[in-house]
Length: 356
Ligand SMILES: Cc1ncc(COP(=O)(O)O)c(C=O)c1O
Image (tube, rainbow, N blue to C red):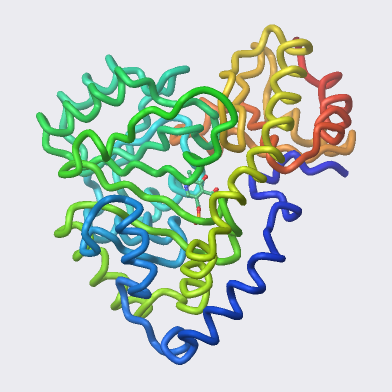
């Protein structure tokens, strides 16, 4: 059985040989502090290091146990049940779920090849500004698209005009395999944007380390909520990450990750272009995913069991849409989790089942 469901970092990418000395140093140098309670906002040496890398003062930084939990906290501190929030459609499925759990009125704005449909975005704004707009603007999960510079500027402008926050989730931003970085929305308007990232994709997801960079009052609200939820985020891993970066392992590890994932992405694009000319999909320049809208006549409800029967597990595309029916023909290809050979083998089993 080949799992085309695994949108997670490849286990062979974990830098265990560097993590061992970094953890030893962390424990020897500061173990007594790092093994105690380290209250929210987090382990101060790491906060200061991240603040320096982000070019802000430490009161703009909050560390937490993963970025996903931050999203949950933000749904509690920033919005009440029934209030409007905007998200891309499709969007990260677990975030859709968190919005539902909190009873938010989540509006999905259709995602195009260069970001959300701006006409639709502006029409929705006229009906009522959201409390925040959640966007994954670099190599989106599940589509793989990157928001264009023009759309970034326009969205930021609208956030100022209608006074809403942008939650800019960028866990894949450092995993660019071709092309040039675009400025973050955060860099365009730090008053209306909270940038969120995590070390899950660039180091190891089991560390459960995420951080926020945003306006000090926003950070203070989430910090208090986090502190009342768990006192402080897990701290030995924060001390480990601090040493990992200080010892100079972080950047070389990014280079290794890009060398690992680039050929996987190229292989997936090559297969799709050759074998599925009737499908619609972006050509990502980084990240983990390609979102494929299969030709008319395909239906996930039929494709999933047929694929399983043939030996490939695929994810139900409907979960990525706030309106699940919109995802009936949506196939997420998580090229991160399969080698080029495994991608070929998976598509060889899957393609005969897809109506072209
Ligand atoms: C867009 C996006 N945000 C957040 C996360 C969760 O990351 P973390 O491991 O930090 O919770 C993921 C993981 O798949 C993701 O794709």
